[in-house]
Length: 253
Length: 261
Image 1 (tube, helix red, strand yellow):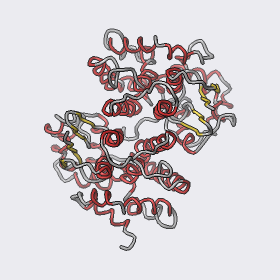
Image 2 (cartoon, rainbow over the protein chains, first blue to last red):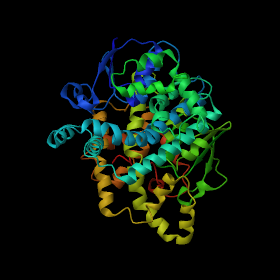
Image 3 (cartoon, chains in turn green, orange):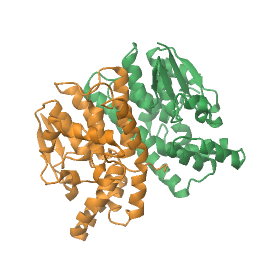
Image 4 (spheres, chains in turn green, yellow):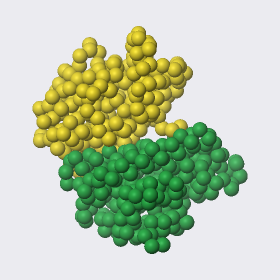
């Protein structure tokens, strides 16, 4: 059965299945969607994923649209090195941290990212065109997110709260990685793939809070993942300067 | 040694109780009253993950010293680590669907059902208690995200207009479940699975909390589905932990609403 992956840059949710497929050695047809051109809300893609969210994976006749469960599916359905711990306790820890990344850390980090990058990069269009683009978004929650980004409606209070949460989560992750070499414990897993997609640019976006002095365990963890061939291969597929941010993890820049 | 720290069998607390009964697992139930702040006593163990977990007031499974929190992943842990029938579909795609439902319903019902339930039942209960004591209990809750769910019950957040808006937000997830049940009797594959335990524990409150959204006329398949799961031996067994006459009316704050709106 063939595999096709609809994705944007190797970053956040798109990067999760990209890096997982690379780690498993699964060849896939890459179908790049430009988030900033709203490709994900166009009819061709809505026929694949009616929710209009990225990524989506098509494996034969099966369509998968939730990125974290998608990673577990890839590990279940394909041969290659296992990407989940052998013991139930390790798998539970992996899943717990993936939820913490997905539901706590990532929304706050992405709110900052959308306010300083996604919004300004998409805001050059006439207001009418932006309103029409928002109307085409199927999910109410995504319409709200795009409206905020395109019309710069993030309040100072909510951005400050997002910053507070990013620092809180960064500190929690640093403590966790001082206890364990990898997210799930002793072995590299989907939890690391998830966390890397979230955090690979933290040393660049939060240089005062994520650096070799304050968060040495996070820095070393990010560099160890960056040095994996699958990560090199995946980030080489980036088409924008966003993916190039990963160079901050070079040990000898 | 297997211990489950649990409050009344409803919402998040109900899930592992059903799963353990499906497994015919022997365990010790350590009961606390979550509406009376007993989860904050030293008698309930706490770890890094349980203190930060996003469901905030949920159950805690302690298995040979390991603390397992977060209810959907607790179901997976129970399925994988205890003997008895697997609760996760065997087929990889059905397992994906089970996890995708867990994520989707967690994001969509994990905050709304507790808001509706606490606004209707916990808020008037707290109002009858000594106000200074309640305020002291709430002020001591960490982290702040966990405290906020309780503060909302004291500061007038849950106006009738607010509650009505929350009920309206149920339309999309309820419609999605109803559509899925038109196509198949269970949410993830040909058999009952942990996806159904997860969904049932939250959906069962809605005929009471949001009658116009879930009723025999509008959502006949959900109503039938709730009836089928309620009739299972495991569900009946799970409800035996109850110490109040109406565990289905016992709610505590849950996950927070998405900050993206």
